[in-house]
Image 1 (spheres, rainbow, N blue to C red):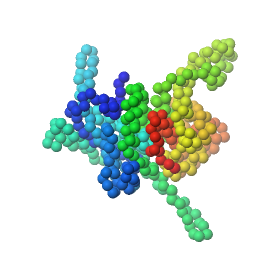
Image 2: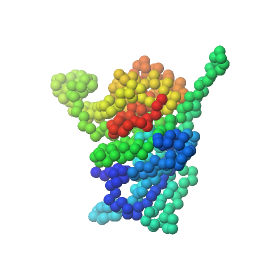
Image 3: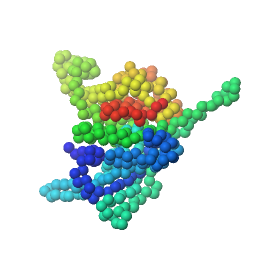
Image 4: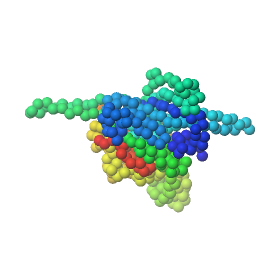
Length: 405
């Protein structure tokens, strides 16, 4: 099995480490702000030590002030060797040598997005230093950086509510920018340790899930429906590693309409049940893995009411499923995923509730209509919180980076 480059990097599995090794630096764009847990949010201004998060494999530097600058600029640097690969085609051997630092950087940033619950993207590669001295007097390659910036969430304005009182006018200002996130070296080293202690298949699935989660955050404001589909894929990617046994009786209950149709066609009950098991089993198995994974790994506190991704949006929690509606909500989510993927039926506009301080009229109109009829699909911000918590809980990583309401 071919493993992702970042898996080999985190495992320190490059066999030719030291061969034409170079230190590379990438600038990152972070939707929100991170700061050193050791020095606190104001440490960035007081000491340079507060700007560096050093792990075993890479260094992350906080370039801009986490409290004032949005989006925040980060610097990612690490040592990457040159690797040699052999390819055989029609009996001819091709040898290809290169540094896979770009693949490593992009996947590291995807993992950061998942770990921090913030959209982090690569803006530009800004430096490459050949530690062997093969790049001239400075050993450094100049790289273009003008007009480079990674994707980030749009800035959300604060809302101000003013009301009269006998004592005079009073006001309340509610900020809607992402909360700052405290980080430390262990924040990222825990992930490397998990990858090192698991199989190649598990590690590759985790990296693939992190890539999907990052893209889901990237699309959150522009296309909430696509974000929903991507988040379902995050769960399917990791949950697919587990074998799920389908209870035939449960399957027959779910597909009772199929059984009835087969009986009308002349099949006896046992034959109809067996045919339904053969035809519906594979699709149901995928659904069961999805539902079972989220039921098993979503913490009870999150089922009861997950933390809002953006502060001030907790007021929309009344639209979220209650803990006893959790499994029903998951079934509805997967049904809608299938309806969109196979039938072109899009999500209702109200799934975007929670991505903005405002609720569009069309969202409230369709929400009222669906509440009176079909099952309501939870807002995408609720599902994002559930997926994020379940994946981190699955890997055993603490949820210390999850923002509070």
